[in-house]
Length: 403
Image (cartoon, rainbow, N blue to C red; front, side, top):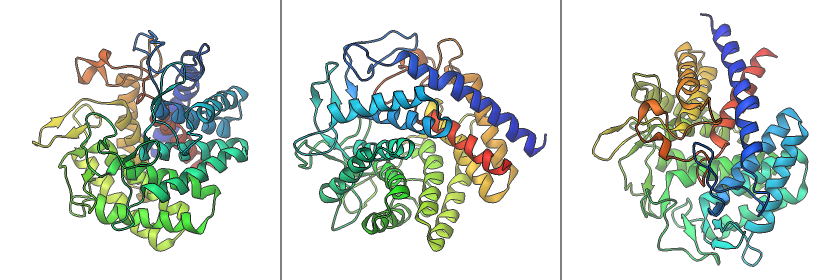
């Protein structure tokens, strides 16, 4: 099969998945018409918990998804969904006293957890910037800029660089810094820095500020110098404030996601020396993930535990990121092995991860575990961002080749 045939077939299937499954699912199933915002928990069989908490991660990721959809397809229903998410985000999650976004709300929009998790603030920037790009809403850009300066004022480590994890609503550093219960309680993490990088990259597209430029440049350097293991070209996950490594877990999904986001950041920054440096790192990360992370069923292995054991469950988001990451490596090298890897993982997603009965994607491929149905279809963490972004990226990248 020729490369052109692979690419054309893949993009048509992915576009159909986006337009006929992912985007309609969230439009039709998640809006809370009684209390506003979005339901915080929906099961695989589409049972709604109307009293569940509403997390800022879900709201910002829906905002990003439909802002991007409107920017790409110009359908009014996507704009309306994005504006609905934007209004709820600003009117309910924004801390009018101290600035920044609360972590979570009760179903009735009262504040449940007012902490400022830098990871979540970054998603505020990412989504608000996308909404501004799609609609021209200047207020959204101003909020994104406010969060950028709040992160730099309160979250930045002036002595060692990088960003601390979590603060109280009044921006006092917390003792419990964890993003979720499975994370380590350490001052810094790969995950937070990856998504600050992603957010600053999107903001720099529309806000050519010299301070932001310097911070994005520094963050790329910090990622390569401290967060990526320069022997294995895999992410280190947790650190103390001085960048001492605290975990030996390998996360293949984050590795392949980080590979293309790092290169994207360098491209948006526009410095040729930085681009060349990031290209080398990007390809090394993609290569090691291809060598070690692909299972016999062509899905991406979730992670390697501290004891060296493989977690072979196929979570939805690493599969989505692998499709993009390997396609990005194919674009940079022309090596068909990366295109074939991207296509095989898409085929795995389409066969095992897409829920062809109830819509959207399973949290975990049923073929990879016995407890897949225990995981939600919608939650704080189960959002349309990874899978919709995979679709957007492939559609646009293939479109550039066709033009």
